[in-house]
Length: 180
Image 1 (cartoon, rainbow, N blue to C red):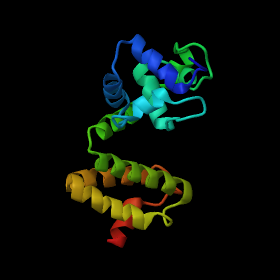
Image 2: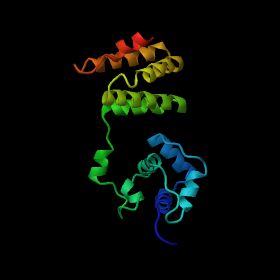
Image 3: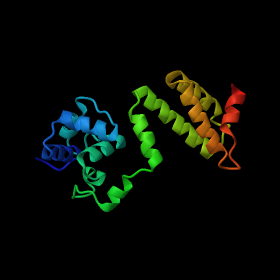
Image 4: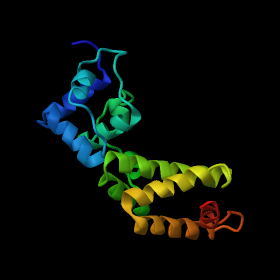
């Protein structure tokens, strides 16, 4: 049969669970919010040593769906069992769980938009407001066009609240309305 590969381990765990490839793809989508094409899993499972490797997002989704550690799939461990450390690392804050649940309910374009807003907010916190204000304003406009003015107001209120939590951090809402 040859040496073990990421794909062979995925196939073995999938078969142990009695799932088809389609059922595994559905579980990955349901549990991790990650979508794979119809032939992707087949290609991954058949890949030879040094062949196809998934992105980290897909690898994580497969580990979650299969109930094993990512280390096991990546051939870094001989045991598929999750350790206490693996389980502890899988918990997110209540806020992150809520954001993930809301994001999972959106269309692909909506998920991308949320990703862009989060990325810009992280950049603003790291780099300061001036570097990202135009892009942030454009995304707020996109949020309003896709989700309505109420969602935009909620985001603006959250940004305003976050902006007042630090004396050094500028008020993003004030800057956004000045640019309007």
